[in-house]
Image (cartoon, rainbow, N blue to C red; front, side, top):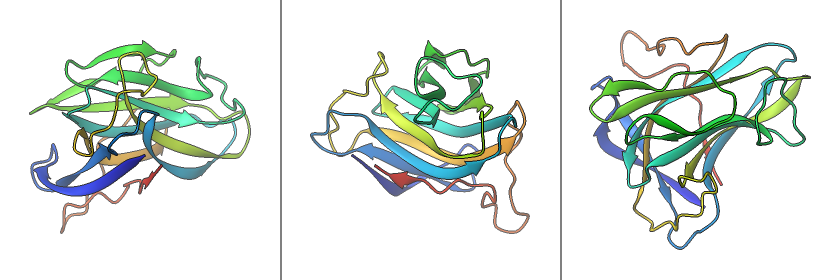
Length: 179
């Protein structure tokens, strides 16, 4: 229900390009991209990404698990927040304390943290959302969200992106799949 396209819009580092996640035309259900990763039990992880509005004003960033598999999850199967990327506020806060950081030029760094109950594969998910979190805004095949440098790391806070010295391409990048 989403398409990712390379764009000629610079990321917040003003050196490398961002990707645009677009809600497919006519799709009314949740529009998401994800990457499955293996996580260890009882280890705190932080998942972060830089986002910029491109027609959708809210995104849901979350650790998607079924059945519930986190010590610190909120109302969803998983741990995450719905974030307004126009003004940097959390529309729905599922117990997350991670800040929304305005990094300038319309870009926000958002992150969520969670601790798995057991060793498990989990989907790191970014969903295009509505203000209510249902993701029911109809996709038009053009509107979406720009994203740059998604990363997963051990710890309770998102650290600076790890960039190579020669190319400036993030080496800790998560490669998303569309759904």
